[in-house]
Image (cartoon, rainbow, N blue to C red; front, side):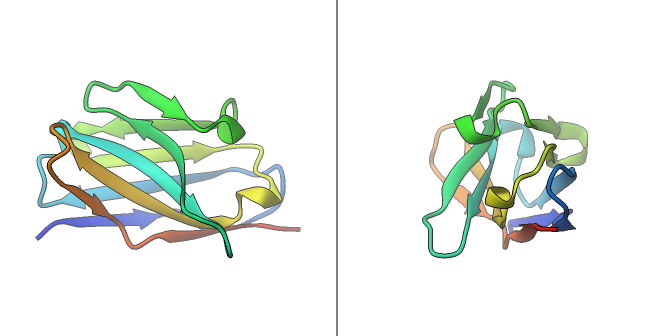
Length: 117
């Protein structure tokens, strides 16, 4: 059974930082591209950042310079470090795993991030 379990969300003040973690089980983590997506109330889910199996990284423009995605294949975990958080970063953040050959993908259950004073 495949599981992606996110953690690290919470309430943070504007300008603060959070580190999200997503630990996987049931997949060969090293051959999966990993990503973080988010969905704000009333909006569509959007890509935040991805890191390929070869550690190629991509960010949405709105988080560039403020966020860092990384992976630890030994721990089957992907991270998203978010700094200088803004109220518009408030959303449920989802972890995503896509097989190298794009034959299957999986989603986590999401972790809530609220940026508010």
